[in-house]
Length: 286
Image 1 (cartoon, helix red, strand yellow):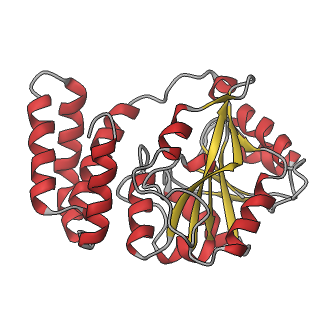
Image 2 (tube, one colour):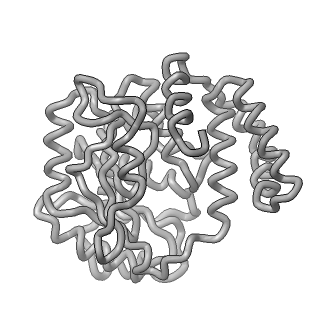
């Protein structure tokens, strides 16, 4: 189990109390992205059984890579400081990985808030246009919620984990693409259930998230999609930026990052590109 956190001490401590009571008793690694609110001291004091990685800077989603590298279990679940797992779900995930050798990542069902309402993403994943492959336990997907996912550690590490150029915001899509390009299955398994309660720490989105999501979608296009697609997405964002300050910020950030992006550009095989297009065609914005 890997949890990344930054400056959300109270929420993290509540989440850890839930996770340490799980019947599966998974080993837990907490990766602190350079908090300034005494998170590190609080975890050391209250949960000495937890592996704590205190980073000297905020690595964003790449902190999860550090946590996975620190663990030795064959399968690793992710949580955020406001999410946890239903009892029995991690055991079920392990059974699915054991039974399906090509399975690389499970996108769990997510239930939100104290009332455990289904996250709208569940229905989207269940209706994936990619269908179900015979050697996998659920519909194939190219997206997931990081805090509601379980990975095969070897597949995750081979794919490079979460990409350092994205930091935060829709970072999951690129990992799903990279796993798929390596022939690992990425599937939705609704019998594996994660809980998410963003209200427990205020519920407000982190500042700049929409900008990061738009930036990362374009960076992902430049990293993995055909050149004509990356250029078309850039042109659309440039048009939006004439009247939308957030689009303008996102475009500026992509422009600054473009030399590093181009140095790491590896377009996916045609078969994977066809799958990406199928998902886009089936989405409301496709």
